Amino acid sequence: SLDNVRRTKFLHTLAHEFCAPKGKAREAATAYVDATKQSEDYAQTAHLARVLRDSLTPQYTELFDQINRLPNGFAFLVHMRADMLSHIRLVRDDTACRAMSDALMKKLETWIIGTLDLMRITWNSPACTIEKLGQYESVHAVKSWLDVKRRLGSSRRCFGFFHRSVPMEPLVFVWVALTDSISSNVQSILRDREPMENEHDAKCAIFYSINSQPGLSGVDLGNFLIKRVVRVLRADLPNISTFCTLSPLPKFRSWLEQWLTEGLTNPPANIVSTQAAKQLMDLVPEATTWTMALKHIMDSRGWTSDQPTLSAMEPVVLALGAHYLVNVKRSNCAFDPVANFHLRNGACLHRVNWRGNSSYNGLRQSLELMCNYNYVLDRIEHNNERYVRDGTIAVSGDDPYIARAMALNAKL
Image (cartoon, rainbow, N blue to C red; front, side, top):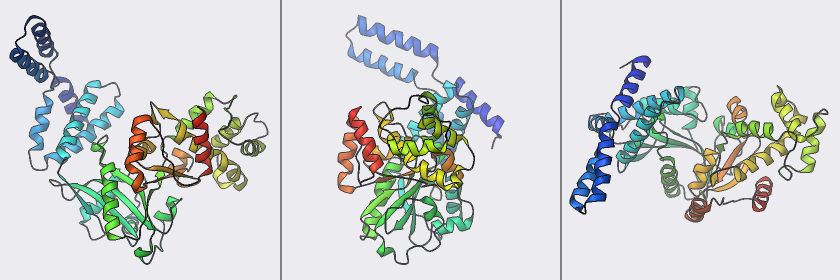
């Protein structure tokens, strides 16, 4: 195996020296264009089209194909792409490596079809498999083997998709908690030392963390995993009627900090109620707008330990979180990547939860907000069609903050 420096040099050489040869591609393109103008020989045109297509195919794709045929070749390529993505994060202008990463991602998507097995992971699974759960967990860090054992214990489930050539290593996996109601706080799940005694009393399955190997970033496996797991749980535990997530808002705080900078002195109306805005401003007498008061509190230390501040922040942050999920868009889709994932899968936006994740990471990413997405089984296909067609967000439940954001959306 290569060290990091040699690995980076290898990827750079592969991306830049074994890409599609520009001269050959230019000649093939010129020959094809000339043939279409001067000749009606369809056989010749088809031949030149194949030559052009081949000339545009990078040479490294043949290497990927050959590696994939080797024992453990698929796993090697997944880890290779993880190295590519790490390099791209450090050298953002390396477009050749980015193109190579995209080409490998397309290959991986193709090779995965028909090769995945769904398996439940338990405390009795091989130690190497359980170890990978901690290694690839990116949402709620695993701190110890005891932590993993608790997440695999009574009234808990973990399911993963395994590639048949790598039967010990999950490509993507999901953690599930079986509860009697829709959970609003992830710490209550992660630290629960007294889970339900009888799983057949559970009413809800809460998907609280979905993770994939870094090299499969961009390959949509989570969608299929959730739907397969729902089918398994319905068969095993027919008492469960609600399938819901407890999901992070990973881009919320960064969006909010930028939004506050842009609209600090002239905050838009209707997002936050007049009463909530006044309560927040009362805490910061020098602030002339509620947005200035909010920024001041966010920039201060220790506000999460002060109860009056928490009480004033709650309605403001919940209203902004709902507005962010419903009205902040990228093209016609939700700006938040987790929201876009679940809404595209056909889930309903159900509830925004104050202090849903009180960890340091939860505060840093989303001011401790979390969100429930509800997979209402008989609405999934309809919700998916509407969201993909025109960005319509389906809603379940009676969250007043989501209702206010939806009403504002209707006026936009």
